[in-house]
Length: 64
Image (cartoon, rainbow, N blue to C red; front, side, top):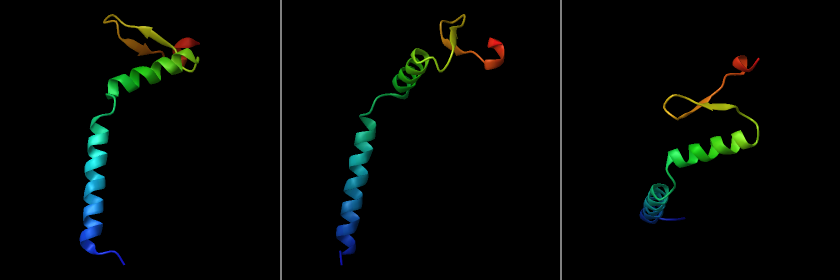
């Protein structure tokens, strides 16, 4: 059986590695913009630009 100290250090190293891996990932804004562009290109959502130049989703009931 594995000792408690070895199990602790394996867990601690795994937590530290995943923390720094998560910090190095892309920002949430980049991921969101990429997802919206992909959905818009695929025809799954409809968008329009508002007064501020930001994308706004169009409700289904507004399309009818």
